[in-house]
Image (tube, one colour):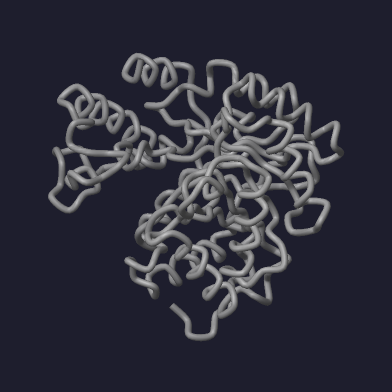
Length: 332
């Protein structure tokens, strides 16, 4: 890691870029998410090195949310510090996104989709990151108790204020997505992108969402592409003591998820990846990118090595019919 960061001149030759829906924005095929590994409980210098390497690899999009940490807000604060130190000069080369929707502060206005919450949250996020605007601001999840017109109206308001350049949504089902897209279009702020959970082990977007996104000309950036680490070589021999799944306090992955059947699937998938001369993680990411409806795959990284391995997926995103069939037999 360099004390004075000077990015590689060939960085844009290393990445594949895809247009997000019908917009003028091209996203890197691999984007970096700061959900984990960038909070105050994590190693700041490691986080800084990962961000430097990401930019050098052609990753221009960094994805955050108000409550990423822990503690809440600390990922944005740390990102802001690294941005000011290393990437401030390159701000216009970056797509920076954040979100609001999940719990952030106490009381009835600290989560979900009200106009009050979304506007207050983005104001706080901008202060934490020392930014005048973000490129994308997302409604992080739909709110059953707030009219969709209010939530989308808040996104439109923030774009027209200049605090965000584009509006996005995350975790919306096909019907909600279609309605949100219509409202935003009528307001004059088209939805740029949708962020769903999608992987070889999580196929819900295939049940209508991807078709809606194509029809509405909305980009798609998928999160948890490696199923919280299951689709990596970490679990080929069982559950390592230092893995996320070994922590009984883990919210999204714990030992109950790692059944003998799941381990068998992982090992069989790994054999296909080996034949493709890819790591399991690379194949899982490439499998997502094979679909042109997927604009970008949002990865996390706890190390520089993991980041580089995942980015290597872009060098082979073509699959034979037999490979796809063999994969489908394993995961379905």
